[in-house]
Length: 292
Image 1: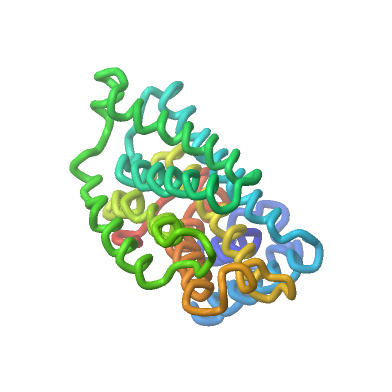
Image 2: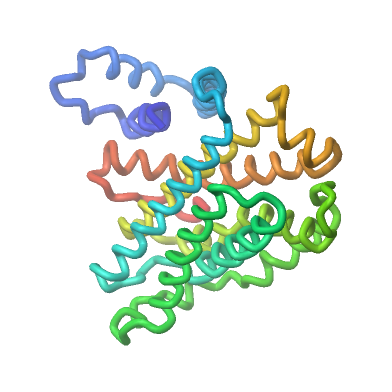
């Protein structure tokens, strides 16, 4: 995310450094300004790869990355709880995304009791409870709070996300010894999680600025997805990989990794503008028209 900040400063002109204009950071920003968009994308990709290598080297148990991802997600939901209870507003917040989040968490929680009960189950339960609270407040809160819900802009159908994910889950699911319905449900929750943020991003279309607490929440999702993607990516190259040995070496492992990559890239564009807003825009996230 430091790399995102540098790229954001470079695209904004790099003129916010004050007396530090002569510093090495400013020099780097000026150099980045002269790079093409393709070169910037390549540099960002290289930075992501370097981060993965550092995580692989220093994090002995890669499962900790997944725990970090779930914890960051829970913190993001906490930001929404604060927004609803203290700001008394759900402006800019997608109820559809929250419903999809609750669905995949509920499925994963149910499957966890059957397939792999561990610390993830506790984190999923906490996040599900917090998400359920957010949904309840949006739907049953005070009339003043409900009036701030932007229903017309939250127009993406939940079924539009659930049906394709279920179909893909029937085709590609883990090959464990558990009952087939649980394996399909587990795959469904993985695919739904990957695209659950789409209704939220759809709401941003055409908006010049993003409400700050909603922006914090979506950025937290982006951070969580990076760690989650790193977790699965490193599992693929781990000699004792749970993903390869326990779930088989067919289509499922590829689909898991692809799902994480898709969700990471879905959020990457927003995270870029979020970091840019924090670095150069006084914390205001401004999006170009139809950026998502």
